[in-house]
Structure formats: C-alpha cells, structure tokens
Image (cartoon, rainbow, N blue to C red; front, side):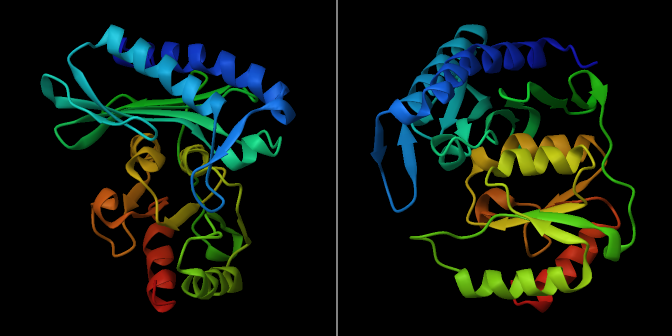
Length: 264
C-alpha cells in the first residue's frame, strides 16, 4: 500500500473533489453546460471540482505551482514542483451519463512526472504511484501485463472527434493494429486508459492530440508498474509532441512499429 505524505495529499484532494462529481453525475440531466469548442464541453461540475483541487493542493503545498485544464498555469514560488491537474477527464462521458471518467492529479518535479493519482469516483478505483515507490490500485501493487503475443494483446486508443484533425491517419493506425491484435477499445478517458495499462488490463495505449493533464499522472503509473512510455516517434517527450504510446516492455516496440507503418 502506498502511503507516502505526497500521495496522501493527492488522494485526499481527489476524494474531496469526487464528492461533488458523484452528486452532479446523479443529476447529470440537470447540469448547466456551456460549449467551449466542437464536441468539447465543460460543465459546472468540472469547474467546481477544479476549485476544490486547487484549494486542497495549495493548502497542503502552498509554494507549488499549477497547470490546470480550466484555470491554466499558476506560478509557484517553488519552481521545481508543479501540480498538473485534470478535474474531470472524460467530460463527454460524464455529460452522457457514462460512468467512465476520472480525476487526474500529477506532481511534476524538475520537469518530470514524479507522482500521480487517477481516481474514478463511480467505481471507487484509486490508482496511485510515486517515483521509486511502485504503482498501486486501492492498495494493491500493480504490474503491467506480461503478454508477449500481439495476437492476444488488447489495446486502447482515443479517436479524433468533431473539430479535431487527423481522422484519416487515425483510421490507418486503427487498421494496422486491428489486423494483428485481439482488439482495440475506446472508452473516452485517456487518464483511465493509461491507468488500465498500468493495471495490466490493456497491453498498450496510444493517442495523439493530448495535453499534459491528460497524460502526466498516467505516465508515472505506467512506468512505476514496469511499463514504457514514449511519444509516437519513440522519444521521451510526450508533452511537447502531444502524443503518447504506453505499453509493456514487449508490446511497446511492436506498437511503435505498427504506428510507424501507418505513417503515425
């Protein structure tokens, strides 16, 4: 069980913010929703959860900065540490009454993901990791899948939607992976997809067009569970490229090769 002071702060903040999300999810048909872009919604629930996370994390570590989906960047006097927060990953699922969404909190230390928490309030699954301490789900140690055969491997991805480019390249990628694997899933919450790679539920995940708050917590979870994370070119900077490939040791190079074959 992972009970470091840092992870305790993150899990407590996630649980407090989750109370409002659970309440609002039960009243989803009554939510006031504003549209901030094509198929990109933000709800009052999203904003309220982010405010709770901001207040709780700032109270616990007042010198740390923030990078948040709605609030943006908030500088801190401690320039080595920065919280990267998505208060509601899977907003579209949330607004459609689909219980596949999460709170994602990461701590970036000296430019690298150092700790992460991903919490699905509906399933009450709390994924947590800290550098050098391992990855855990509700206190149980996680390891990535040990499958080596691409034919039995299950992958997840994100599909570009209305207002996003890259539809045709994605379909080419999907065709390459579908042809040789046990299947591909698209659940609509990148943070949870990465957490599920860490838990061994998927052999790998890929997506393009993500933001740091979509990836940061999941990256440390996967690596602490024994997996590999890169961008789609095989480099180590998913934040800059806004693309990610995460998988176990055997599937990571295979998935990279398939995506390269598809022209990424």
